[in-house]
Length: 524
Picture 1: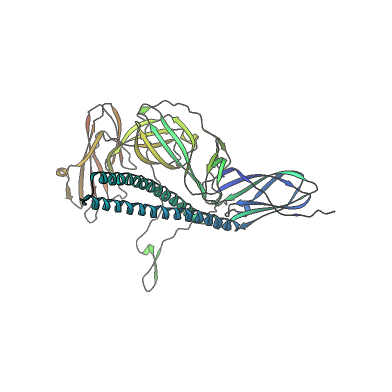
Picture 2: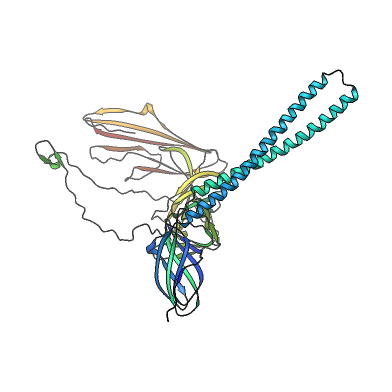
């Protein structure tokens, strides 16, 4: 004997867990329902309209069989939205009517006050009134004017309160109109059971319009203390469903990026051809062109400076390492409404050992920057992000944390220190251009002066450069480096200075460039 099916049995569900990716989110809803004998259709409503139908997973416990799972859009929420607006408009009209009445009563009150003031003027000019009558008239007017003033204060307060209420209703109506309430989704699950049974359901599905990105607060008390790093996530979503007191997980994965491995295609090299109007000619008949990509080579920064001891801080979340990403499981529940506003979630806070060093490249900027170099930074699983910098309990600005590096040392700039002054001056009287034979010679003589106005010694890395020739016809001769250490590949010259308080030093960078007379070379 077959039992009749239940028609569209609506099942309330609640968001219990959300995994937020760098783009998109996976939502887990839980629900409990009583399933009757026969074939039943369970409708889980109020779900985001942007649900990815291919991502839906339904898990359940109980003595029954799941026959099918599908999703559909539900536009009934638009009707609910309109009813909500109609209710708000009705309340708004009540407030508007009260406001109109209060303004009218205030006007009448003001007219009565004006009439009494005019009547007082008329009576004061009437010589036929005796003193007793005049006193009675003045007492009456004083009493009445006092009552009028009290009512005016009452009316003004009532009008201000009604205006505030009216603004709130206007804002509520605007919020409802601007809200993403046009449609929701239903997940429809068809089940079959031989008996009445209690079932627990877990629904998993992917939604877009959710993301998180990292930011950091980096604090350094002084150059003898460790660096404190607060790792924060900025989470936002506009999925159409509010997440209230959910278990939140932040993943470094990104499902929107293709999961297919890219394949290399042949990379062909050839000489370009040029059209002359009559025929094509190979570039080997013209000028030979060499095309290629160079590598960015940087000299390793020496870890000289101040060393701070490490202080361990317990992590605030549980870290899970997967094959292709990391997950930060947040211990405390969070509520994130579907309004697109940022919700800040603290991921971790650590104190790490750091080597501090002042550095300046006066050719680019004469500002002296304090840098902190952190080793073993990879174990904190940090992503690239914006940094708020604090030094000596003072906010000094923003920076960017670039963790897309294979280096074992992470360099963090802690801002400029105005107490160390650097100048770079070209000695123009020594600037020469000579013609000798078939060649030109040009000299450049730069003087770099450094002054330490701090009350403590500092270790300063100064970097400048001499030109590097890429043509055998151009010769560069280093004439004076003031004991600077040159890098023959990049032309960079480095000085590691130790400056006592109020100390100053001068560095000279002098070089000569020789090249053929019939060529132009820009020498700086």
